[in-house]
Image 1 (cartoon, rainbow, N blue to C red):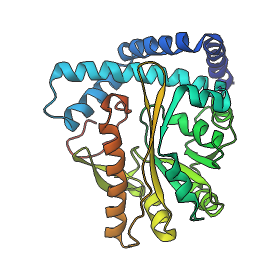
Image 2 (image 1 turned 135 degrees about the horizontal axis):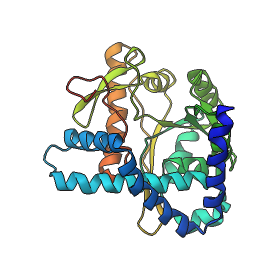
Image 3 (image 1 turned 120 degrees about the vertical axis):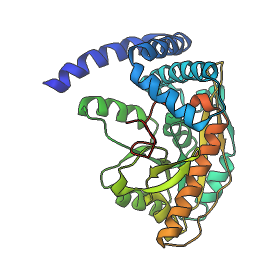
Length: 295
């Protein structure tokens, strides 16, 4: 019953927002994000603290302005997710996306080992569910199920609307291996905090952060090519997808090798974030449980 009580208002609001013209809906999303900044002061403080640690030379005013942009972007992202299945195939891909480097994915898959699409919660991070399948690239995206199964089912439909599929994080390693063996591209958002027992410590914006080592282990063991991919938002409601040349991790399965390669992948994500700092998920407690971090 609790799930339905949560789902009914959610689907009602989602249905209304899906009926609005795209530009109106995205503008409303930005406004909702601005409102959320006032309704969630704790998250706003987390974002400010994260930025203060990551950019110690940034002024208070600069951080305040950046936090406003972060929440505005999150509101827009919420609308994008609710309407993810409303893109019109390749027609809208050409209309709304500039794609740089798609050949790098094709080159990686030509090796026959699959490829890891390395990304993070940056810009329009759900774009991979649309862009790659529409371009004919078999794609699985690793995602954590939502607590409410009805809401989770809704977002799964959005994400799988173009022929891609979701790889549940439960038993995720086995499913990732299977997808790679089938020569699929596997999208990994590798920028979130992991429990200490399941993580290694690597630098991220100058501070150690607990990060999953599983992707590095899989990529090293099977010499899977890695391709970094990010979709940045433009002010005119279009997107710039930037895909970098493939790279490989040195096959060193020692603990030091795993940490070193996980740090390398994390640095790639950090470099992507630095291209537009306002578009990352700064409200997340990425450095949780680290010394001097906020409890």
